[in-house]
Length: 356
Image 1 (cartoon, rainbow, N blue to C red):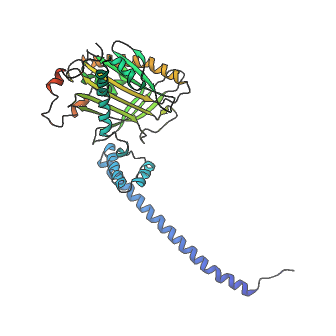
Image 2 (image 1 turned 60 degrees about the horizontal axis):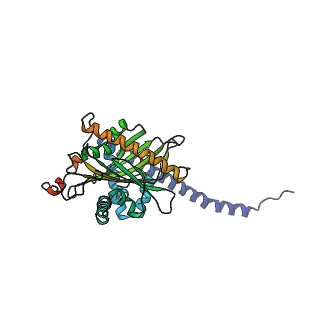
């Protein structure tokens, strides 16, 4: 009734099981060795990290890590970008605003002047003739245009203004001073610089702002770079959206991923005398469900209010009612003895104010 395994079969099984146990033992030893080596390396990396944390500040440590990733990226560009993204390192080489972008921004105001002279049109009409810009707001100090962005439901906006009661330097500094803006812009929820590039002076800014009811508040993370073109007597600021590991998306705000802004300031005389022209070109995607004309109305109605507040804030800075940082102090002419020509300073050859 019961069948028993032949003895020869049992011996065969025992012979087979011995190499299996030996192989299993070798694998176990190998796994233990790998675990030991990995643990040692992790402990060593932790100790090195502790050492650097005691020697350097957080900003310096991030700069050091960024430099290491840049060197790695130069040798293995695709792999470097992937590893950087996984490691949460911001790559300035990929995201920085190039010199060419700054130059093109300065050319926009000059091209508008050239078209105005060529067509003998007032600058207000010249703005409408150029590439289909449509006027939406017109006031004594400024004018606002818009035009559709191709293959999109969005608009691009252009602001052209002239002020005669504040200096270009003060107006420029007010645009850049994040701490001061928290005092004069009631819509600001959060505004801080989260990273800086020592080579170009570029900054990454995290900005959270209220939107009109019933919309949720939005936040922006963008890189900005500013410059002074001493030869052509221009101040330039370029900004565009980026992603940065120090400002991750949260459920508190709706993140705006598409955003760019280009600003040019041209003094009527010099950077420290009253009077300048101001050109701002701006676009973003606030990710709303409202039709395009509703978003256009909100921008068209909100822009004049913002410009009025900005102008008032610049006047307070000019009158020394508040103290602001002078961002232009680090931007010296490449040739220390080289200054704008007397004709530019006197405004003899430069176009006159945009609005009389």
